[in-house]
Image (tube, rainbow, N blue to C red; front, side):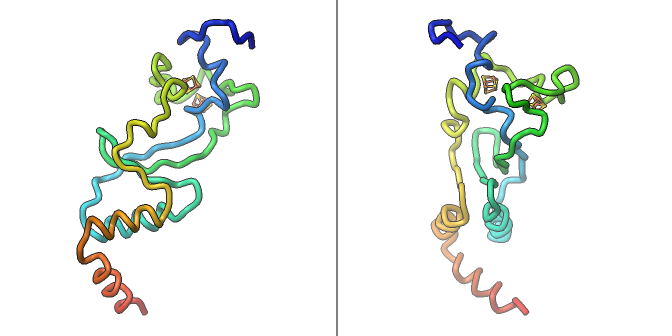
Length: 137
Ligand code: SF4
Ligand code: SF4
């Protein structure tokens, strides 16, 4: 690709390393409020390639995983039949221009980060853990 070619919305995807928007899945979740909700999130974020974030639209699980239809040349292997969510994605201003993480208000990439947040958020977090330990068979 000639580096002197101006990047426009029309040709941008050809310059995008690895086609960033085809390498993850997000799932909106109910706003976690109770300690048990965060306990569940701790389990989820403990798994490889699973992270948790909050942005202006709420809380989400983020799974870093490549779409099986993404081809080696960066193109979509099912373009005419691609899902609606892919059709709706607008590349006028996308992750090529700015990483999605920049819009996150909270972002937890592992157990330790979320655990530290729980300790700050809940004064009785450690009591909650002790209670759970005492009920574990
Ligand atoms: S829409 Fe944006 S993030 Fe997705 S492949 Fe095109 S340039 Fe990359
Ligand atoms: S179906 Fe096509 S456009 Fe949609 S995520 Fe997969 S490769 Fe990308």
